[in-house]
Structure formats: structure tokens, C-alpha cells
Image (cartoon, rainbow, N blue to C red; front, side):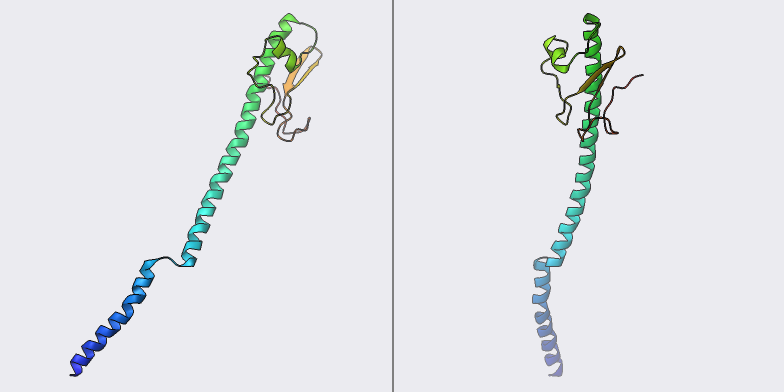
Amino acid sequence: MNTLRHRLDLALRALARRPRTRRRMRGMTLVEIMIVVVIMGLIASAVGIAVFDQAKKARRDTAGQEVRTMEHAIELWRQDHPTGCPTVERLVSDGILNRRQRTKDPWENDYMISCENGETSVHSKGPDAIDGNEDDIPTRRN
């Protein structure tokens, strides 16, 4: 009898433990879900920072390329007009720049054209739209 009672007791204990085990296996706790959400947020912010930096670099590169294009357009314009300083609108109206080409920098500011002592320079004010500081994109002369 003792062994039968012992076996019955063990069986009841096993049955009593079983629902707890199932409950644990049924889903995740709130803490586990929060940890997963935090990890996903960290990954998303790291990716966002990398993409943002690349977008800033792409804008600067685009502005630099457009400055060089403007400079070449001005050289062509000056062959027909040895004196004077063109504007972007004049380059477009004279057909030197195509109407589909961008006439504003990536930050939607006008390109700055200056002519002094026979030298012409083109630059963009850069992201802060303030002329004459370190973020300007100048003409690159070699």
C-alpha cells in the first residue's frame, strides 16, 4: 500500500507541475517582449544614423558636382561674352544650362556666382544657407 500511495503521490505532483510548464511555454513575458523591443529600437537607430550620414554626404557631393557644372557653363558663356558676369538665369536663358538642370543647390538655395579681376567662381552656401563660413561648397580649382 505504501508503494501504491507513493506512486499516486508522485503522479499527482507531476500533474500539478504540468500546467505551470505549459503556461511558461504558451507565451512570452512582458519583460521578454520589452527586451526584444529595446534591441530592435537600438538596431533601428543605428541604421537610421548611418543612413542620415550618407544622405548628408550625398547632398554635399551633389552640390560639388553641380558647382563644377556651373563653372563649365560659365566658361562657355564667357567665350561669347568676355566681359560681364552671368547669373544662373542668364545661363539658362542663353541656352548654356539646360532648363531641366538644377539651378538651386540641394538645400534649395541659389548658387553664388562672383566675377572679380577676370576670375569667376561659383559656390553653394551649404546646409546652413549662410555665405562665407566653413560649410560652403566652393569651386575646386586644380
